Length: 558
Image 1 (cartoon, rainbow, N blue to C red):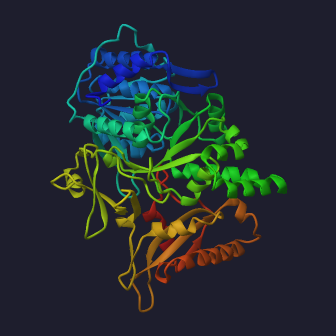
Image 2: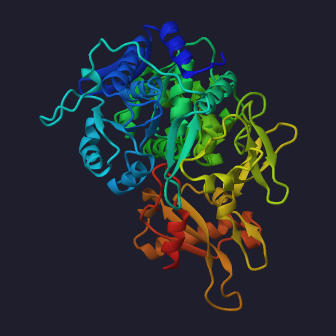
Image 3: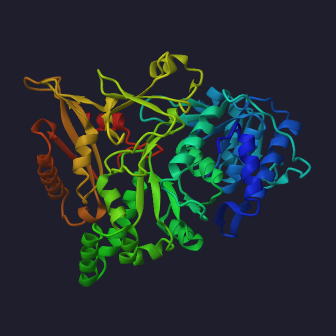
């Protein structure tokens, strides 16, 4: 169904799935679960409280600072019903970073979990616009009578305010890999277009008319989680479960207990999960290892149900009913994707940007390729810029713009509505599959004018199981006839297991350099790294696990 507004969405899902579990999370006291009916009631009570008691004006900002939990969903719906613009905050940011964001968006009220109440109180004292704090999960805090979501009287049940579809529903601040955070304005029209497109796309991924239990591990301030893992999954009437941490033991506990069937995730988590499975396998007997290798080779020729049978011990650890996930937010290592497909877990790689609300494409249906990000969703127009090879997009999911930054908005959205993605891509004419080959801003220009994309080299080096992290970048030479020209450098962080095989860093370094040179023979000579740097410390990343390439480049040129 194509909804005309978020109100009709909430009304339909709470009526059709009244007593079904909508959101749940396990704590030390047991399971905290909301039915769809309960989610609707709590959301309406919050909306009425914001309107009647606090008298927050329509269109004002409401910020949320919290870990993912069932109450987060009620706060999102409550804010929408009250006619406010919701600003989900990254709870991993520092006071300094949050101050910068809140000074920009000027929220009137902040909803906060008890975990971050001290940080919220400090921010309230520094940001004049913040008049109210509301706790999401307890009735009082340190003898201060800060109102709680649960202390709102039940009389508040009916008030809500409509806003036009062109109004901003969410302002999502991208941490970015360079520069100051930018507020991406996502309208109600954007969100509804995404839900419509995703409802159609998911028909080719998820079984229809079955009870689905989904796992949520991405933060709710992540637009991928908010759009797909929250709104779209609730739109389907699914049950969503959160974990108290990202520890594998906590995740597996929820998967087993609730028999999780599907999830959305990022490639970094899948790589970690693959390493965990392989690490456990390495401790098994030679016979078990041999049988795994034999089954792994055989599975390539078998249907997915037979693969699940061959690798049933692994599936039992996941609860026995887990069949797949959508991966997005960063490029997926093909070898990681193939590993899970081979053991009977479907991996559907997608692609998106915050600026597109965010999903643009996902592998599904007749044409699928692990090296691609799939065909575009129904409402997107796609073209490749002839002069640069850049992927350009147009459609109802493209953002309104960057908050208070018309200058930046005009740089990425053309007058006729085409969005510059910054990604180099090609589109298969027959299958319509989109292949992302690199980022324009990451491009390395060599002395002869040859252009190289780091992502292409990283994909080759990711074949090694010994490399935990890889970053390819361009560094300028400061000597010889090519002085001032860029050359290719790679930074490698080895796995702990691989590092433990060497008695000195020098020997470890030599082994990695040898392996990099060997793998690089798959590349044209001009694409092979000249400088190979080995370090044991993790590479700097954003809170969404993207490499901070500029910072890494500065580290190796010091």
